[in-house]
Image 1: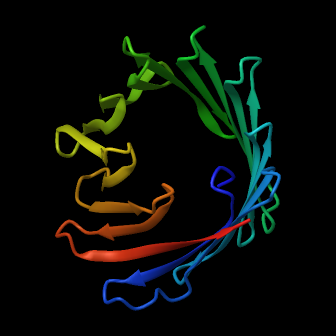
Image 2: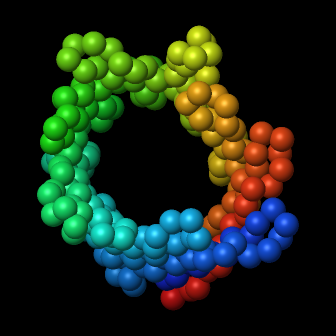
Length: 239
């Protein structure tokens, strides 16, 4: 947003019949100094959500998400090389008033390629995530372990150094099924995304368009039969 001197983004959503989506709100505003961004989101089927992102030296340092009676604060830490090495999230419900925390620790090779992530949380078993990279430094495999047992495996595929597929084994289908499939244009902008539910029964096709400055103008969601589910149109306000 700062690169394009944009201080505010708003969006309208339309339904399949072209009518405006009832109760839809999306406003995003960035401070001139780039240190704080506030996003407000709402729709008819869920309570309003306010997201505050705090930045230091162009790096995300804290996110605060408020939704109904629930607040989640997430703090981000970086090592001396500027790599993300710690994420601490704390969620508290103003009704129950019992905080729940989750911490992620990231570890890297000397060249900056992640090799491991450890996830700790209140009342949950420790999860160890291991990454495998190819000769180009792209993560191609991701393994999740709990109590020494492998519980999940992800595979990543690339074309022209761009991520094209995220795949994992589907037990119900007894085969590998993509979670996401991505397509790009000649400007390396994402123009299509295929999103598949874990059981493979639901598929959403997303298409994206951009203006001459490279800012995303529209997002359109379609179902498995390519019928439009919803369309979001963005507007930009310059500084």
